[in-house]
Length: 277
Ligand code: PXL
Picture 1 (tube, rainbow, N blue to C red):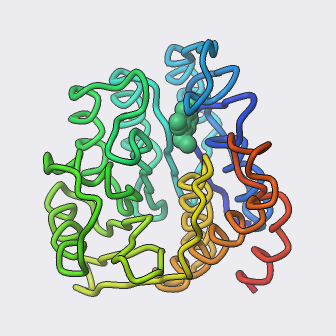
Picture 2 (cartoon, rainbow, N blue to C red; picture 1 turned 30 degrees about the vertical axis):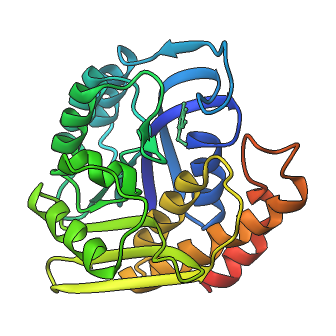
């Protein structure tokens, strides 16, 4: 059985990070170990007054224990990280648990729609860029990719621009960047990837849905990472992640007013299993 370790926060209410990654990757038939980096009462997107307990101090002890008992993982997947210190500790984790048999996927979850999430600054972005340099796969949206590269955010762009961004992301050190939320203004939305080992670009699209719900980046990254762990090709993992994410957004449309805090991914798990078969 494949085993992934995912390192990200647990937002107790509001579907994202671990409350998305754990059920989705598990449903894909992959054992999912977790390191919660922080406990928040809700995620930070749209709620105010949320609590935030930083668990940075706990991470080295967990890693040490796991090294003692000899745990090994097929993949390491990181999402939202709460601080620069935490990024450094996660980087050490990569040194100790990464290797030839274990891929690293980093979702630099820190920004969207041209803006950093609450609580992050330029120093955090620089540390995240360094962490991305240690990954096999990174899974930014266009806002995050622009921040990682120090480029201004562009809402409108074409295929050449997306491919330029993907090539530049390889220069920061990762092997295969995956750009999410790609939209060339032709009524489609999806993802684009570049595999620097094969020197090949990959695309996957569905019809654009006029709805943005929270946590879809985490859904995409969880499914893509799970797909890679299952031995799917980049193109297959991209197709599965794009289709499942679009399904989740579609299912959320009727619930949109009540469910602005997350997507109805629970209602689409049967589709996910169909796609991975
Ligand atoms: O979905 C990314 C994410 C994860 N975790 C927390 C967040 C966000 C986005 O806002 O606030 C705590």
